[in-house]
Length: 312
Image (cartoon, rainbow, N blue to C red):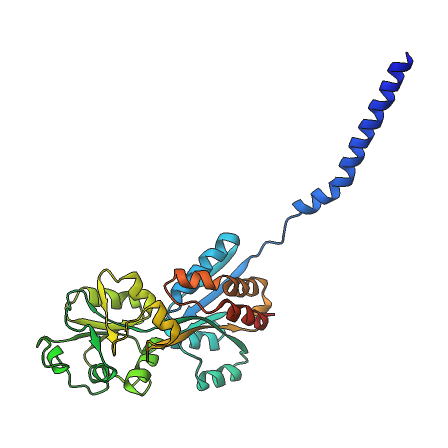
């Protein structure tokens, strides 16, 4: 073997050794990057407000896209109905369009349910009429009260204002288990759950209320702003004392007295389950965008960040 060939062979061996050495040193890092993360599984049960429903559904859909092995059910039995299930430990999270009541807190405590209250959005209950209604564009709180109060004798639009048509008003309203019903009756009738009832078509499903008013020229109802936003092509929103419901008026509080916060209530025991804790963190981390997409007013980002500390 010539000296030149010998030197070449030695050089080749050294290069090969260096390459293998480099590969060996990199191998652990590559394995670390490829190590699978723990997959979430299990089940999350949510129920309650039909107003908060679109937000929780959006969050659930996005969360499931990243965690397909987690089963999530989102019901809409109304805030009151959801609270009953929450207190009875039938669900992990309750959607609510009003704050939890004192008696609900007491019942939860007696049943050993500790919870966290999280504010997730702002809403403005929107009074709506049919698209062909060209007269009821603006109403006062007093006029709304005259229609919706318990024992009301108002039958026609003319009974509200003399220059309105003498046609019978057809009323559609959220059911009595609805937080929207409670908030509206307290704001307009000055007493929660005190309302006209004998000639009102009720439903816990806001979609049913939308259909009722959209199909009835003299129809009138009220529900969360997002349902109006999604159906504004077939409904008219009624201004209250000259102020129209909108993202801006709800956010700055000028849409009175029907602006309100929306909540979720989380069972602390359920938070011990990895899937529930990750879901609630995901909810707060993504609420700002998903709340807006659902047709509601998002809170300042700092509010969501601050609430994350409650989930730890």
